Image (cartoon, rainbow, N blue to C red; front, side, top):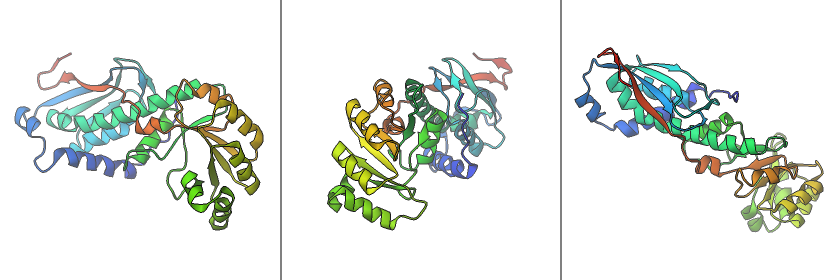
Length: 293
């Protein structure tokens, strides 16, 4: 199980509230309000329908609590836990109307973030035995970056810069517009504060040589072959952090990690990871006082 620092409530609450407002609109849950008696109570189980890594339980809890403050959620697992198909990750109890009203929003967050954690864990496992860390990028769903980057950490990964104001990353278009790598680095160095790191993206060993001469903190080795990466790591010789990127999967990551790079950045784990299928099943109908499944 991965130990992951929980997101603060001040980050979670407005995101969940916005998602609920989007779903409820102006009229609320017409179906549940019409079909379910207002005093009907129930207990439902959040169950994994496939194996994976759980992330987003706090967001699911907020979805239920913002709809109805009396709902109780009992966690059976914590974020970063590995779960098997059929395993219960949490039980929620309270007014049945409210449970069904919050269901989709809770599952949307839980399934999406658990999918990211599961995808991350697969690549982390693939490079075990090497020093390379798997890091996420800024390729995130607008408005959900804090959540998606959190899910990466729940899967055992780490995060690249969080935004444009964290550090300087001189990419190919910066270089193309500036004219050359050396000028771009010199301008960045002149503007950077003493706490700001500078990384430069290169796709050839010739560019890497220039970047090293100019002096940088980290180098992004973009879409290089395993052979080129091996040469690049040797050229750097510990003078800068080395990062490999470019359509990396769990299948290709081991060979890349074996080159000795410090970081492997993977964009798809946040922008294209498939969900982890988690469902909400009726466990106990307290109004009828009997097991339903």
